[in-house]
Length: 470
Image (cartoon, rainbow, N blue to C red):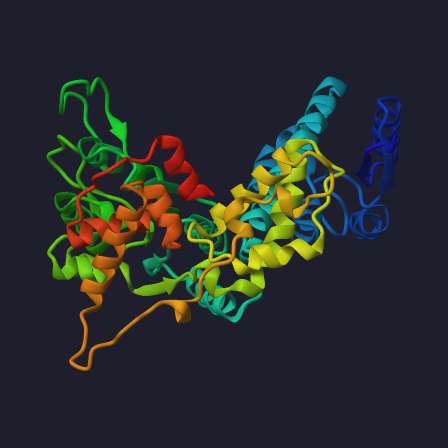
């Protein structure tokens, strides 16, 4: 086992020898230097884990040595030794970056405790840095798999925007990785060391969303037993990701506009606004401009959010990225299912590439996981793939489309097509969505847009999940 190396710097030969002997007896590997220049050379050659130095030395003082160490080895902890009458100098050294100081005569217990604390502190800093680097790699732009032109152009724009404080609006279909992109923007921003807080505006009941976002004060409503910070306040100094911003009720859009314009929030039940410094990244699968026209989304809020608009392409528009995604998710699925011997032949990739993936990357990931879990043999075969991957999709060219010379309403055609498909499947929304090659959420949105009632056989929750995820 490698011993921890400590460098002792002191012009007093006797004290230097005593400290070296005590530390070697305690199990450390010790180097010694009589002055500052020799100490700097030793640091370069031996790479100690800690430096123990006297403050008063001829030539280069301990304080000057400390300043050089802080420049050349900023992570190397330094403990300074001082005589009782020069405590002020030791305090100045701590302010200059020393971890701690010890006074002469040195008690060994104090020395051992100080060294142990300094090494533990340095180890903790290194662990935090490693964790942060791992998080940066996990959530950085390089973790977003794909090399298609459509994706790369978005990532390049997001990378340039990341280091600003401008609000960003991500427009993308469900399952494309909106949150992954938002988190990559955060970890590449100047706010990376501050919180990244996310909230799905469509997943929280309307009567709870205001308190969840803005917080509340004690007694502001029944059940408000204490003051509560909202997600916005929790994100202070960092990034707030508002997913599905199009689902936010109109009355809360006004309060959000105040945050974006003035940097202020007002908690439920509060009488005074509070200032909050937060960067907003919003995302939606809906057409907010169409919502502005029908009065369900504020135009002023839209333009405040869309300072930098990003459109994340659906998977069907980046088919060249599918093989890499399949391989990535297949390796992950093997680990999760504890099936290290599973093999996916390259001959099966065409089935994944020929499908349009209405549920996008989320659907692809879930299909691969399900395939790995349910396959009987280690080598995946065509028979292990879901039916909808194996079936051939009808080309639009085969449809009988008679275009009248006077023109046609696209809205009317879409409504008619949806109604006929629903009738074909007796109102089953999951089967209808799959038949139309769209997600169930997209089908429900279009049904709502055209005023089509949800009749027939409603989908079960399991069917809903299947349509959204696989």
